[in-house]
Amino acid sequence: MPDDKSDQPTPAGAPSNPACGAVVEKMKAGDVVYLTTAASVQFLRPIFVRVIRELPELHTYHGWVWIEGYELNAAGDAVARRELYVLRAGVRLRALPTPPAKRATRRSVRRGAVRVG
Image 1: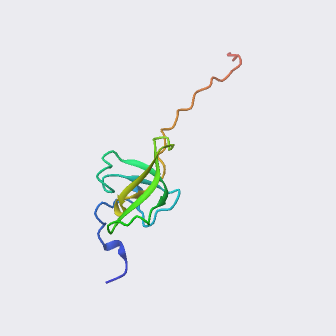
Image 2: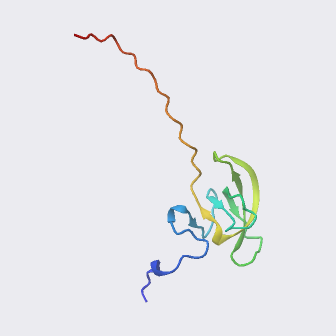
Image 3: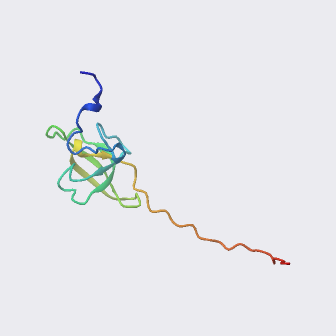
């Protein structure tokens, strides 16, 4: 059997599209992660978190981890500092949510008189 892993099934809860977010092996300071019910049942309303650090001194069950981070609002601003207990396989690395683009305002162009004829 070849070493190509493309034939292996996707783990439960992992996105089929890599653009959806990658499973995080080791979180580091500054990572922005997306937490849903795949990470823990407490995230019925998914949240973005900017990781401060993992807390390895808090021993957990296999596959689970404590992280310390800032919960982010839709603009990407920190709104609360939190310690969270999450299933590592359910944590997704993401880019910050992008706010909707503002429409450019139209400026009138000054035109001179046009001579016809």
